[in-house]
Length: 463
Image (cartoon, rainbow, N blue to C red; front, side, top):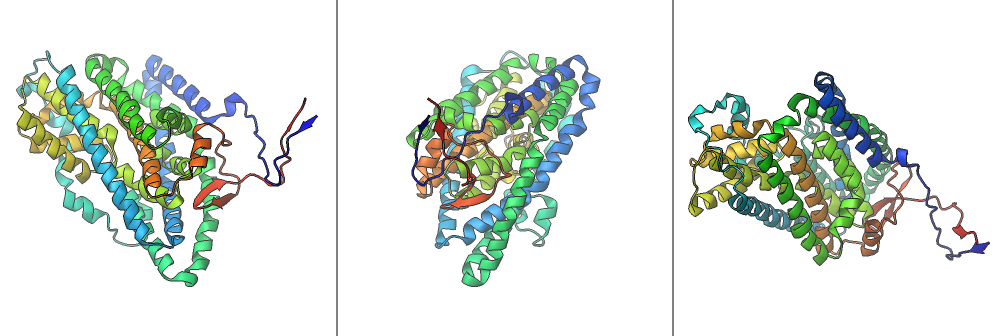
């Protein structure tokens, strides 16, 4: 027997988990079964919708306390409150840069591939009644209204209404207030830190239902819309998916390499969250565990708490690619050539409208309606052409948005000097134990990571 000594530092045992108990394996199996059920038994697949809806509601139930506790405790522990403004400012610069780049990518690819050419649709024959709800929401969503909506009516209303930005706003103010009162606020800070353990344990419990939620959501999607609904507009769907993949691998990949990590390793690290988003078509479903994963990857809690929730409203790379691509597709399908000046106008309007409807359910379709209502060259009734396939494209939008927010969190943490590179490398190389929120959380610098029992025996290797 050869004993490997590591001094006084305890070495956590690597616990082998049976393959069928791994969450992402369960989600893959659930999605596969859901697709088959929805395809061969459409009516039965449609009836599975409550399973997906129930899981989304369960996750949304826990999002507000997760954001509040993470942000408030992270800010309250800061010695430099100016750091809050720096982090938010740097995050906004990043968001604006890459959101604009995503819009440009969608515009350029649509001009090259021309996914709508040859359809020769007469705009006068289109029935806009099916999209009136989206158009009305787009009309009601203004930049001023959006900014005013961030301020809640009461301190409690964000937690009952589930508005992420309102919860973030209250958490930032509360964290600043706790830090400002000094020692008087320490008992409250300790209470909030203690609350994090049962809250994240609850997240762990809820995530066990992820395969059921993914099964129900994908069964409904395939059963209601059918795989066949994609075939008539296959070129647009394929172009969008390929463009999104290339955006992630090339553009975000270059950002990742410049900042010292691999985009493919990051994707592998957050694969459970990506599969959850794929199954439910809701990026919110992965928000609690994404925040935990980013902390475990070495990003400071304060940075994670500020960047991730804000990115869910302002860093929508997938949605932005979709907006300009869909707008040009409609113009091409209706044989409406757009000049360079008209396309630049489309780009500028999309930059503003994407912020005005941020955080709204169905934001991709609503922001497209908002953009087309301002740009007279493209008929808004043309949105009926893509209404049937929007559900399938929403999954790709959500996946791209999720990867973009993970990259943004690491980049902003590095800019702030709040990134533990050793912890990041361990996470990217798969050296961390599986995420288990049932164990006690402890502080690693400013990063909350699951603690291993110090009483575990040291590693031994049998000769």
